[in-house]
Image (cartoon, rainbow, N blue to C red; front, side, top):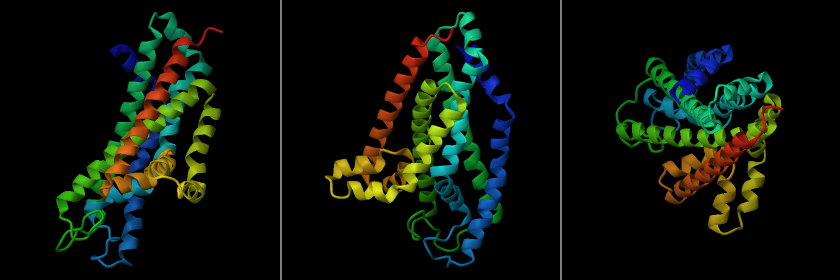
Length: 275
């Protein structure tokens, strides 16, 4: 199993675009700090919209998670699960007597680890850039949602945000891996994933209006069933103490992950790859 995981990591990191994505993170962090520095110049330090150095990790992820982070995850999923169909690499793995279940599990481990590493590097770059480029909070330090909250809650809220963000990215990875297993083509899988990310954000008002007059549970399911909308609004409501949204968010993600991974696993294990 260890050799399989190492082999998957090696094949993934041999691709230049993987390094380009990771090396682009410090550049993105620099321009993000410049953007919030510009916003700070038009905002009072007492305002909730003011972004001190300790808040850039949180604000940066809130800005990029629903679109940019999701787009960054798509090529990892599609490459791990579809590129090998085109190149015939799965046939070589099967000829080496590895069980299909172990191959699938190793791919999921590599995918989850890579996404976690991506999020860690993103957070570290945002944190370091914030300390270097943005002003520190003066007087009563700012919280994420309330200017009078103490500094330690900024760290707690940011940690919770990154954990929830990672959970939503795992949900997206599970869904995209399911799509990739049935497409077997990088272009189709990325195209469908792109549509899944963009379309709910374009029609978000229509989606929310559709569920507005329904019972709270059904309204919550409609509002959170699409992962990009969950990332854009659900995480915010969960962090301000709405336990109903938090529990519903986690249940929907669990259903996404369990159902999609199980279906992708069955497709991977029982598909005839030799023809």
